[in-house]
Image (cartoon, rainbow, N blue to C red):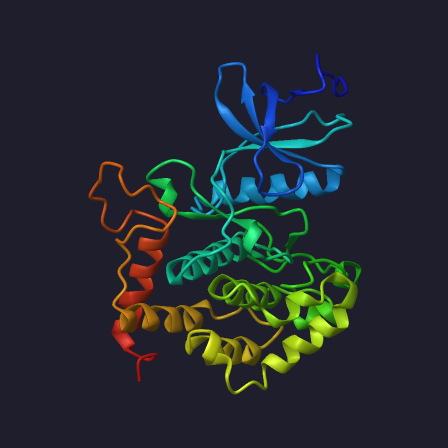
Length: 320
């Protein structure tokens, strides 16, 4: 196999096509818009390491095989001997900096799908979620960036071969990493839920107390997250359900698969009490476009919320 070659510094040769770099997209380091020889637009993610690139390809390929809905479509990758590894994937929209309840449900749904594929992220944060680029995919939230992901289930859904997870104690983004990640304990899928919780806190109020410390004072960030557990006024700045969700996540057995339905329960109750519907447009969707009556879409948030809604109504366990 020939090594990486290109006719210009902005041209990349993949296994199935040639792509020209067009400029920065703006949602993640090393991620750019590119065009193939037919003029089709994609996103190219550039890597320094073949190891991280292979993790990304493994996650995206598995998600496609299992017909998941919250992952960008994978199209191509660099040649095996390339000195500049890259991945070509579906072009998506901007990352989520401000959002609402339905996005909290969709981001949770995407993490559940990731775990269903047998991986956990280790780096859940707002900038690793993006909205679709074209209607009707604009109503779907996608999870991206899997260079830190680890496999914990094999392709048959059985526990993966024993791996020394102590090798992977470093990782994650300081502001959103779990307490266990701060302690540099071996990572587990439950860490994704705690990071998701901090992500949702940020989406509701992007002035979290520990943001002022930054990466240089990780110990203070850790202490602030611990203190959050003892705050009686958490509901002053966030929806009341957030305190309940945090207690629930903290009570999950660390070595078992998280019970996502318990978290959906709180979000669905808030949707019901607030009178919100899943047919409402998101803030980022164009208001003047021609309306298409799609109701609950066949997949994505409508599908998942409908499933949870019916499930909860059957037992009504989280409304008592």
